Image (cartoon, rainbow, N blue to C red; front, side, top):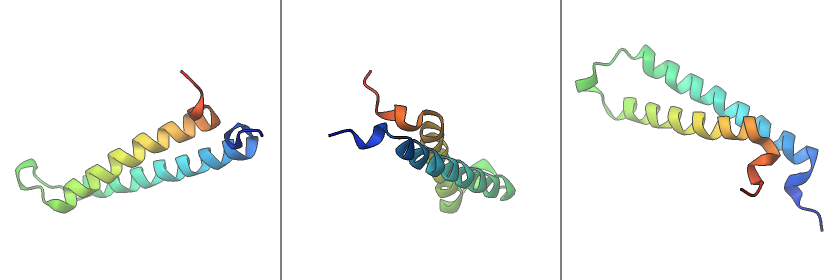
Length: 74
């Protein structure tokens, strides 16, 4: 049986969510920058936006750049 992640459909299916996650990271970090919060007075919302932005940017970049090659053996 062929691996599901070797098809072109899986490749596109992995890259599209990666681009969506990159867009979500852009929105989260744009909102964080627009808040104009001083570093010593950052609240839970600022930390949550930074966390969401970092996670979505990291995961989205990996998915968008690698696609089906994400599962290649090293």
